[in-house]
Length: 43
Image 1 (tube, rainbow, N blue to C red):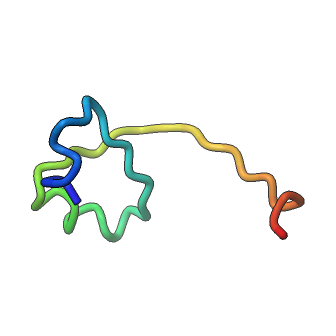
Image 2 (spheres, rainbow, N blue to C red; image 1 turned 90 degrees about the vertical axis):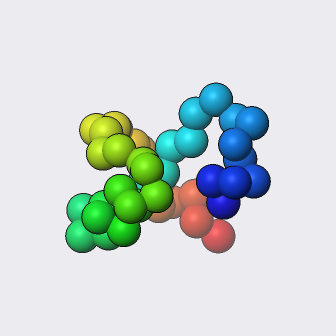
């Protein structure tokens, strides 16, 4: 994925804390973010 997106300025990946070590091995760094989930829009 990272190779295919190497031309992109920023890649944001949302993941659970327990898999952060996996992504850290690829060079990604932990970062805090905020999200919204609107379950009523799930069809």
